[in-house]
Amino acid sequence: MKRAKTFGSAAWLVLAFFWVFVWVGPVAAQEWKPTKTITAIVPWPAGGATDLTVRILASEMEKVLGQRISVVNTAGASGAIGMQNAYDAPKDGYTWTGNADVSVVNYPVLDLMKVTHRDWNQWYALMTPNIIAVTADYPAKDLPDLVRMMKEKPGQVAVASAGVGSSGHTALEVFNTTLGVKAKHVPYAGGNPAVVATISGESNVVMQLSMEQADMIRAGKLKPLANMSDRPLNISGFGEVPPITKYYPNFPSIGSHFGLMIAKGAPPEVVAAVNKAFDAAAKSEALAKFADQKAVFLVNLKGAEADKKMEEVASIVTWTLFDTGSAKISPAQFNIPKPKQ
Image 1 (cartoon, rainbow, N blue to C red):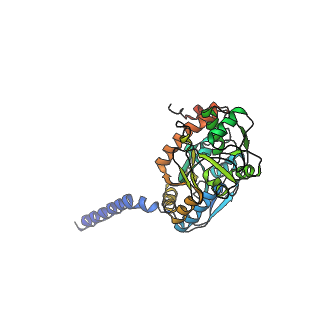
Image 2 (cartoon, rainbow, N blue to C red):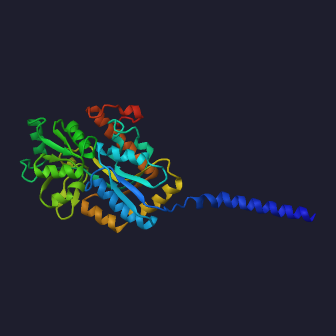
Image 3 (cartoon, rainbow, N blue to C red):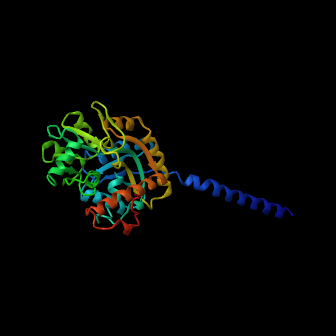
């Protein structure tokens, strides 16, 4: 009888440990603390929108994760080289990348990567609209005037961008298609080089992101004609840049979300830890100050919300590039639906 009681007590003890493991074990297992430096690959040159965003996020997320995040610029192939390097790295949480949603969705249809936007965990902190700007002495007095010049001289007005498939290039293709004009696309190796080239006179117009143009607009070296969204954009120290819908009410909103990506396959505890650090960075005073300085909108998109936004962006952007001939591979091959009319 005594043995039976002992056995019964032991059985209950084993059962108790089992339930503790079931209910407590998985929660504890999600705690991830990096034990070495994290590498964040920026697939564009220094000074552009992606580079600036990744650096400010890294500086804030280091405080939460307790480890250094080393930002490395690896430019080339419109950002595809650095993105591929990040994807090919061990999926252990120690290699990140950063980019704009517009670029990420374009790589497969441009035949730059086989990896699609669905292969990444994504965190977006900023939304920056594209700005249509010209050099300070360019004769176009407003946006309708620029459109008139483009129609009168098809293929002669040069528009700089960060490269084929970049946000600036996509904005130009939407601009051409929607307004029935034809401009000369001049690709550069990043957003900052495109802005510098326009200021120097190599190009007439730039349609890159507000983040990349804000400082030069304040300095009077670029003249903004409109931002490509449906709401006014305030640039502190300069004033308000009207929305393109002021002149063309049915023009679609064009802009990019910027943030971080980690290839899917990373342990769930890594994703949970990055979520926590990212939330802190997204709410930080440093990022709010940065958003004001660079004339962008603050957002916090991750998980299912980020995935949903990416599907919307992919539908609009990839089909625009394919229908205009910039992309040779149909988005249908990647099960990307056409945008609803």
